[in-house]
Image (cartoon, rainbow, N blue to C red; front, side, top):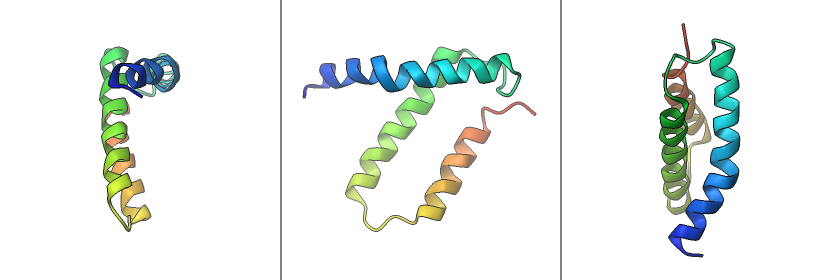
Length: 79
């Protein structure tokens, strides 16, 4: 699969649903007031890179992985 095909698939599936859910969280006041497109691409990019890292790293400390992801996402949460 080419990069363009992969990216189109990512945008039409994962990013679409991520953006939809982030928009709902923003409407409910759970997320800080930020551009949802920017937040979607930041989170998507970070998780895609993390997937590549996990694929080549063995073993992975699942607890540390979880804590790291939670801390990343907390940065977008409203107080």
